[in-house]
Length: 319
Image 1: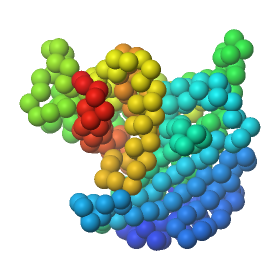
Image 2 (image 1 turned 135 degrees about the vertical axis):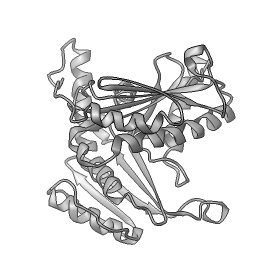
Image 3 (image 1 turned 45 degrees about the horizontal axis):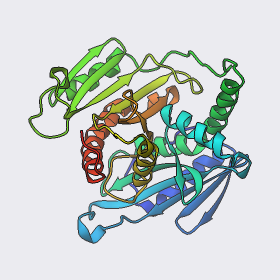
Image 4 (image 1 turned 60 degrees about the horizontal axis):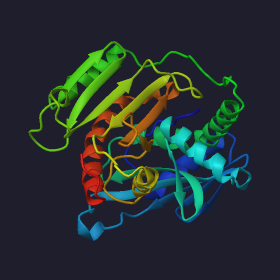
């Protein structure tokens, strides 16, 4: 069984026990070391660390723990040109993690901040488990797609499976978002305009101080098939082309920090403007059973917009 039902809140010291049991039910080998869990899937090793917040005494008192997931890229893929292409490919089509450069080595990272009296265990447990089980497989599929592309072949991995999300799911999200922002839906697509500051006008009228949040139930992932694609486009422009990659990598690294941040199950990559930051996630059909994931992803986008705006401005990148 892919997902176990977690009925009640549990302290973080129990979380790894639940994860380890579910992972072993999926026939993967695990080892434990204090508050760390190691999972081996083929040549991939994923490390799950449950850590305390960075500044519990300085405002993070409501955070119970932070779960960091890192999958190291195997040495056989240690080719700089291939990894550069893979970073662009994987992060542009991200499922539930970002390929990042950390201290001269590559890893795929995700993070979940758990708050005191958290009531979303079903959702969070499913996100953690699917990320752990699917990261290595997704990396290999992306690698094959890159190789096919370099050889001029159309990848056989293209998957046109329809999405499990329907207009009913998107209508629910619209009913909530329309109360706080400009929001429109068109069949299996929804678009919202999120203000970077209170009182900002709609981007439709030319104001560059809004971010664009879109969810698509009609854009299957080329490797994972049907699902829900989520895209947050920021209006900030990185004028120096040489800074685009490093700044996006820095954002992905900062997303891994044990701080008061929205769940990180996606990746920063160049947006549709080429030099603007965008955050993308893709939730495969199997995750549709996690109730309210589209609405939760939209709420996370609201908080991510505020955090990213402040962070980018501090880096000298203006909207």
